[in-house]
Image (cartoon, rainbow, N blue to C red):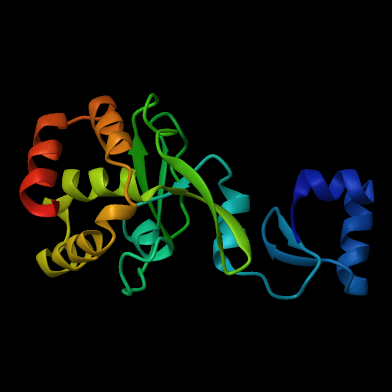
Length: 180
């Protein structure tokens, strides 16, 4: 299990006791401020703990939702537009509008870890909104996979999300032309 520094202070009482637990092998320091009671933890679990208000999006979310088999080079995280800049080189931060960050967020279990990720419905909208910023082959692969699961999607939710996000008309027109 992964702990923040504050959680370790609650559990162990002092910084000295935390360091002692590390020396005794009861606790492992994963990164500054992130600890674990097991030697190995997945990167997604560590990132989820480091950035609890962020949501996996775009390439990361497409992969975790099974819409592509291309493993992303970075972890793509959507954060509030007023959030601090993430300096982690393995993370690509996408600043999102205050009112839309929580739209379409779901918690999925990925490799035994619960992570916050955009739903397939929200990702369809993000795919269309950002299609000019991604390779054409990658866009077409994900679109092809959406066509395979077309009957699993809740299009009422897609319309609801599209109304709350920018580029509503473009998104709905593209869905009708390319997905349906």
